[in-house]
Amino acid sequence: MKRALLTPLLSLASLTALSACDMAPHYVRPMPPVPANFPSGPAYAAALATEKPGLPWTALVGDARLRSVIDRALANNRDLRAALANVEAARAQYRVQRAARLPAVTGEAGASFSRQSDNRQNSYSANIGFSAFEIDLFGRVRNLSQSALESYLATEEGARSTRITLIAETAAAYATLAADQELLALARQTLASAERTLALTQSLNRAGLRGKLDVHQAETSVEQARSDIAAQATQVAQDHNALNLLAGAPVEDALLPQSLQDLTGSIAKVPAGLSSDALLQRPDVLQAEHQLKAANADIGAARAAMFPKISLTAAIGVASSALSSLFTGEGFAWSAAPSAAMPIIGGGARGNLDYSKAQRDLALAQYEKAIQTAFQEVSDALAREGTIDDQQAAQQRLVLASQRSYALADERYRAGIDTFLNSLTSQRNLYSAQQSAIATNLALIQNRILLYRVIGADFATGEQS
Image (cartoon, rainbow, N blue to C red):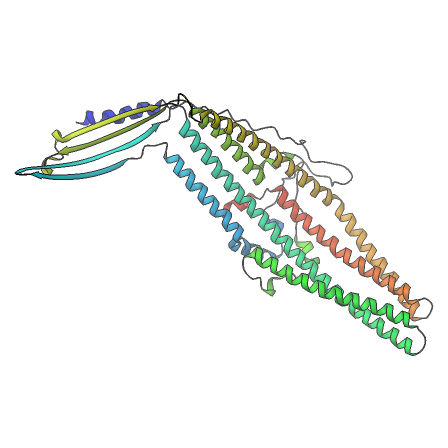
C-alpha cells in the first residue's frame, strides 16, 4: 500500500524536476543614459569625492517642531496610507501567483445511500489529492511568479518614494509658512512706518509746508501696505491649511515655525557626491527597474505559453460499501491523470508575445527616462546650491543699502531739502529689497530640501513599511 501511495507522488516529483527551462530573456541592467559625473563649472559648488550622497531626514531636519510635524505626516498622511495599501495588495498578489508553483492539496469525504425494493446500497469514500496542477516545464508559471515579485518590489519602492516626497513637501510647506509669516510681519511694519509718514505729511500740509500731492503719495504707500497685509494674511492661512493636509491632522500653533532665520540654520546641506551612479538607487528609478524586470519575465511567460501546457490531476483515497472497512487495505485506490494542451491553429499566443515585448520596450524607455529626469533634477538643484549663497549675501547687502538710502531720503524730506517722491521711492525700494531677501532665504531652504528629495538616498524611510 505504501508503495502504491508513493507512486503518483514520485511521478509528480519527477515531472516537477523537469521544469527547469526558463524562456525569459537574460536580464542585464541597461547602461545609464547620463554622464558618469554630475556637472561642474562656475554655477556649481565643488564636491568631494568622499562625500556619501544623501541624508536621512532626521539628519536633514534639526528643528524640533518641524520634526514633530513630519512624524505626524508619516503617521497620518492619507496619500502615504494609500501607497502602503498598494504595497500590501501587491504582496498579496505575489503570494497568490507564487502559490501556483506548488500543487494545491485538497481533501474530501463523501457518502451515498440508495435503496431499491429490498436492495440497499451504501458507499463511502475519502480522498486527498490535487487537481489540474500545471507541470511548469517551460517556466510559464515561474515567470508569472517572478513578474508578480518584481511588481511587488516596484510598489515597495513607490511607497518609499512617496515617503521621501511627503517628508520633503512637509518641510517645504513648513518653510513656506515661515516665509509668509515674515512677509506678513514686514507688511505690518511697513504699514506702521507709512502711517507715521502720512501723519507727518498731513501735519506739514496743514501748516502749508507741503502740498496735497505729497499727502496723496503718502496715502498710496499706506493703502499698498494694507493690501499686502490682507493678501499675506490669506496666504498664511492657506499655508497652514496645506500643512494640515500634509500632516493628516491639524497642526497646533505651538508647532508652527517661529522664524525663517531659525529654520535656515536647522536645515542641513545635503551632499550629492560626484558620481551619478547614486541615482540608480533612487526609489523611483528602482521602481522603474523592477517594472522593467517584470516586463522581462512576462516575455518568458508569453514564450512558454506557445509550448504544450502539461497538467496533472491526482488523488489518493479509499472507498468502501461499509464504513467499518473504509480504511482497510482493500479499500485503497489512487488515480493520476496527466494532460497536455497546445494551440495548433488560432489563439493569441503570438500576439501576447509581441505585446509583452512591446511592454518591455516601454518599460525600458521609462526606466531610462527616470534616470535622465533624476540627473536633470539633481543637476538643477546643484546649480542652485552653487549660487544661492552669493545671491543671499548680495540680497542682504541690498537691504542694508536700501535702508541707508531710505533713512537719508527721509531725513532730507523732513528737513525740507528734498521732495517726498524721493523718500517714497526709497521706502518702496527698501520694502521690495526686504521681500526679495525673504524670498531668497526661502529659496535656500527649499533647495536643500529639494536636494534631499531628488537624491533620494534616505533608505531609513524603508524601515517604516
